[in-house]
Structure formats: structure tokens, C-alpha cells
Amino acid sequence: MGNDSTVSTDPSPPVISLRDAELRFGDRVLWHDLDLDVEPGEFIAVLGPNGTGKTSLLKVLLGQHSLSTGSARINGKNVHTGNSAIGYIPQQRGIDQHTPMRGRDLVRMGIDGHRWGPGRLSRVRRRKVDELLAAVGAADYADAPAGTLSGGELQRLRVAQALANDPSVLLCDEPLLSLDLHHQNVVAGLLHDQRVKRNTSVVFVTHEINPILPYVDRVLYIVGGHFLVGTTAEVMTSASLTSLYGSPVEVVRVGGRLIVVGGEAECVDHHIHDDDSTVERGAI
Image 1 (cartoon, helix red, strand yellow):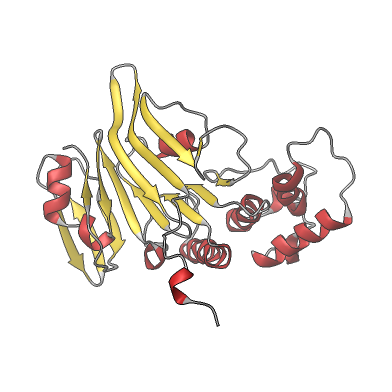
Image 2: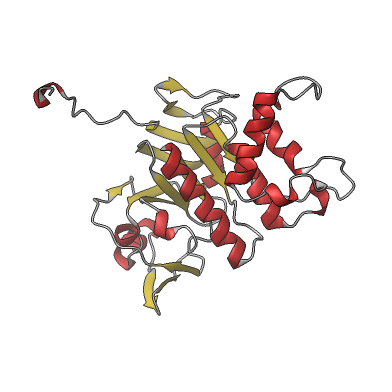
């Protein structure tokens, strides 16, 4: 039997690390002084009004935007485009109904979309595509024309596509947009299941937090260049959001939901999910 004293208790290094990060376009600062570590398997919800830089944060991590100051690293390396460690689910968008692409072709693009031309799909890759389709419950319409599929069906395929290379990070940009409540819950559950199975970190930009709140570990709330990081119970309070917005904001609990009104805040309906972690405040 081994000596327990030889077992390392050091925590795993963060999958995503932002230090003193600032993003500005001209004179406009989207956010600044952002320090954030995302641990393996952690689920981070990114909230805030339109135009506050939520999608831009994902583009920084994708290597599409450069920070004005500070650093952004994934798996200990500076961010860059074409990082195979990242799976990306874009905002919902339709597909031309006349496209010849099938559902399985969308998933296949996550495996070899960087290659030139269609080529032949090897037996290994074909099996991988079939496994991904089964994992997201899309096998029944895998061979249907992609343009004929519903929004919920397409989002399942995009989840499978994003998972194709077993990423350590999933970046999700409003993946529940335009989906009905049932499909929101289905897609959210799929992402949660996959992050549990694969220990994948999830950064999830959303205005519709209800379906993901049971799975969220922490919230990053961005407003006017400032931010709060903490659990939902810590960030989504009248005192915290009033300080963040710089004007009165009231957080009201109604029927197990969280309503945010006042100040510059949009009226947002949230479920409550309590936790006891410590809130971190940005420069306000």
C-alpha cells in the first residue's frame, strides 16, 4: 500500500487564466482589471446588458480580439486562433433550406473542417461522428438536410460539433437564443452532462440563465467596464448590483425566481441557486 504522504494535493492549474485584462475599442473600455481563473470542469455564466463585452470576451479567448492590456492564457499558453483545445458554440443562426449539407456533415466539420475539400471519412472518424450524434440525441435526424431541421435540432448538432475534438474548454455564445423552453433545458442539460463526463470547462454567455442555473458554479456579471465574480447568490443581490451599476437596482425574489429591475439593468428573470463561495469585486 502506498504512502499517503507522497500523494500530491496540489490543485489542478486553471484551464483559463485572465490577468489584469482590459479590452477597449478606441476610447470605449468594455472591461478592465479583469482577473479570472476558470478551473477544470467549472461552469461560468457571463451576464450583463447588451453591449458590455460578453461576446467580446469569448472572442478574446478565441484569439479573434487582442487585449488592450493584460494577458489571457488557455492551458498555460497564450490564446491564439485555431486552438483545438476550444469547442465553440456560436449564437443560433439558421441554415439555408436548400443546402445539401446533412446533420452529420455539420458534426463532421468539428473533426476535419480545417481540411481542404470533403475527402473520404475514415472508419475511425465515421465512428466518432456517430458517437457524438448519439451523445446529443441527434442520431434520428443525422442524415436529414440541415436546412430542414428545427432550431433545437441544429443546436444539438452544434453541441456535438463543438465537442468533436474533446476540448478542455467550451465557449458558448447565447446558445439558447431563439429556442423554446424545452429545447433550452435540453441543450443546457447536454452541456452539463458533457462537462461532467469530460471535465470540460464551460464559459456560457447568456441572457436566459434559468435553464443553466442548476449547473452554474460562478457568475461573471459585466456592466459599464466593471464586473463582479461570484456565485449567483452573492452576485445577484440588490446591494451587489446597485454597486456595480452605480444606480439603484432591486433584486426581487418571486415564486422561486429572481427579478432584476432598476437603474440601467434590463428586467431579467432568474432562478435562485444558492452557494457559499466568496464574491470578487472588479474596480467600480
